[in-house]
Image 1 (cartoon, rainbow, N blue to C red):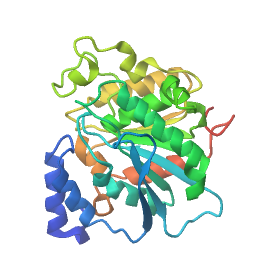
Image 2 (cartoon, rainbow, N blue to C red; image 1 turned 90 degrees about the horizontal axis):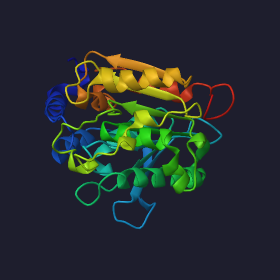
Image 3 (cartoon, rainbow, N blue to C red; image 1 turned 180 degrees about the vertical axis):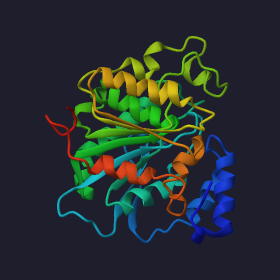
Image 4 (tube, helix red, strand yellow; image 1 turned 90 degrees about the vertical axis):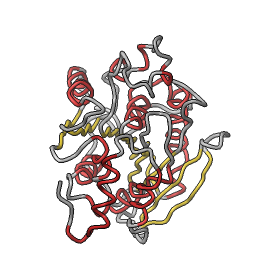
Amino acid sequence: MTFPGKAGLAATAIAAAIVLLGGLVACSPLTALNAITPASGYTRTDGIAYGEHPRQQLDIYQPRSPTAADGLPVVVFFYGGSWNDGSRKDYAFVGEALTSRGFIAVLPDYRVYPEVRYPEFVKDSAAAVAWTLRSIARYGGDPKKVFVMGHSAGAYNAAMVALDGRWLRAAGASPQQLRGWIGLAGPYDFLPIENPDVKPVFWFPDSPPDSQPIHHLSAAAPPALLIASHKDKLVEADRNTGGLARLLREKDIPVAELYHDNTSHASLVLSLAKHFRGIAPTLDEVAAFINAPPPMGGEGKP
């Protein structure tokens, strides 16, 4: 694994520590990563409530120097953590990455186990996206250019919001309002559950089949960008990313399917960070997908 020389030994040590944490759930390595990530290129509005629960809050990152006169594209990013842990504050490096390309980033928290089980965190995710669709114009975003994105468990949340229309409809919105969605190393087809941390989250052994994104595909789904790592040892890339991509194509849903050789499950999201973009061109791929013209037939659907 090669890192930019200017990052130095300290940055390399941080990268190694994060890669060793397969679930990216420990706070101190991410705190260290954020400490070396520049904050001069964006402004951040913290702790906006999209619901009444303390974890139903989000932060908004806006570029200091917008590149468009009209509303900017918007990315709602959900972090991973096996639906057991995580904090939006640990992912400032993602906010920096997206704003560096001229996008507005929305980073929500959502409720996790043991406080809640499926589908409550999906409901929270849909509520955060619905809030964004209603409110982001006040922050310089274009509500017709809203994307949902996530890594690992967060990619699952993004997939369910984009593919299973009942959650956004319950929140007063629709998947057809989304320009697209982006999944990084996402689990989309994982029954029967083997991970002991995830089993109680999905009511094992009575895990509902409708909890799987692969069961919620229709021709009305928004376009997708699916990125994974060949070396992922936590979420099987061929079954999850490859399998979902094949099913999307069968429904004639636009989908781009990309894989990287130099990343693991954890370092795929790390490759978005300022000093570690040499690991893989993940940010370039995300930006190209967001900046692409919409498919024929509308803003969010083919």
